[in-house]
Image 1: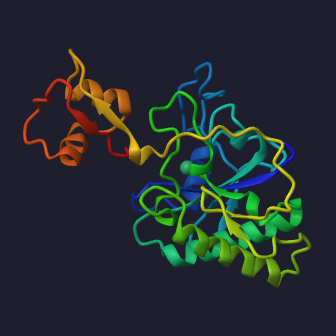
Image 2 (image 1 turned 135 degrees about the horizontal axis):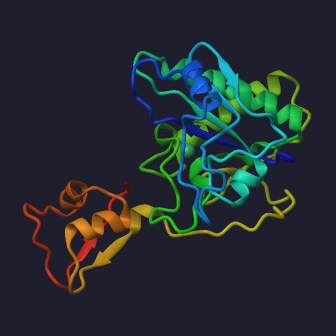
Length: 249
Ligand SMILES: [Zn+2]
């Protein structure tokens, strides 16, 4: 792989001890399996380049190899370095974010990647998944979308990047695109085609004959209770023709 982007994730693994070393062991021992399926996971495993916690960053994969962490056979996996931030109990989130920002700045410098190509996992739509834009890393997104928190993180990355003498010209007078990323009109257009889907939070489903809450739950990969909550339903009865809000999973 010739890395052109850096993709930021968080593990959503909240168990005690699920730190960077533990993830490293799990990857090394082939514990993180995923179903290999045409159009979906290509290798039967989940794998990414770095995991960061409050104490360290561990590299699992050379940066010239593709990971399987973002969007199956999409550009996120084909062109980006994947970084996972740990969320295990007791791990300091702020220290993890600082270390991730430093690592990102270092990788930008090393691979000549600009700030506008530092993206949240959210950025890469996953084809064939009911919620194409994953709410990841959830704590750097606002209601599942890049916003102020993501800007705050990018500013931090940029601070470290400048501190190490970042050689990459950064956009002057940045503007913000729909992903909440800093972009510059003078920046060359990305050669990678990216399909843009409607935000997941605006999904609705109009109840058709034969629909049940459990079927909708499977179809949209959200729990029955989440659909009930989002629509104020007190039972599993759904009314034909009613427009239901489908919350993010
Ligand atoms: Zn992710």
